Image (spheres, chains in turn purple, orange):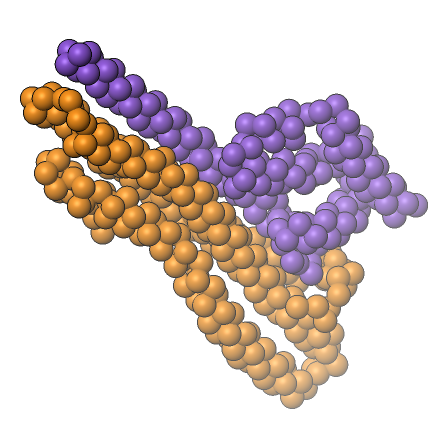
Length: 160
Length: 232
């Protein structure tokens, strides 16, 4: 009986998260679609932004599971955690986050996911800052070109 | 040596600007690329070496545990100890497994993040160098226009050359600023990665302590029984 409840909670969590993923695409979630335009000239930033979305989605599984099992009594919750941890480890393995054989390694997987989220955000921020510096440089170059042209035309005008 | 130091003193007068410009543009970018490329390579080989070392240590540890258990078996209360020794063996094996997997996972994450850092920095510098080269070609074109202009007086030409020189100075100044900024970004990324690794080591320690705390309790042994004992 306890095993049935544990499996049911696990399946419910996986279904909710899958549904959230599909829904994000159907409703044109900004986190998925905006980077395609914002980073259309930066393939690396686009890749990082997509990875950040999927890593965030992955980490959301544990939170969703916590909500699903919240009404259960402690002993059933513990049993459900053990079943879900196995499934979640399998999911993390498919995203190359962690290759673990023990269900209690799930804490390590969550810590790795959090670190990856932070690092991806830092890389994207670095890329955006570089874009802003580059825009300033392009502006400075264009200004210099226009000022030179203007000066040349003025001096040519003086000659004629 | 930081990239900022590497180019220190290069932002000279415009007299040497042309000869120095190519050096300024290409050298730091190569250095940035080398910086980002080398650590993953180095770390990968270190990881392989460490894995070999850990495998060896694991073997040594297993031999030691087996020897201890053999000793226990010789004792007269062998039957009573039989179950405990089997559980201890299983526990030690599992703990070694967990340790190896945790260290490997943290190591892989670091390599993966370092690869992403390299790709990010490489894209940033490549795009910058495109703008830089265009600005440089523009500056040379201005010089050509001035030198070959048929009607301008020498005074006007000197004035326009000064304007072109200012552009070159600007390019050098911008290159210096850009490289300083990238250097800061690299330092920040490098610090983050070091922090992640040291946090990972602390995490592994804590993680293993938790395993040790629950190690030989009845519940833990029951849980161990559900996982694949031959894995790892």
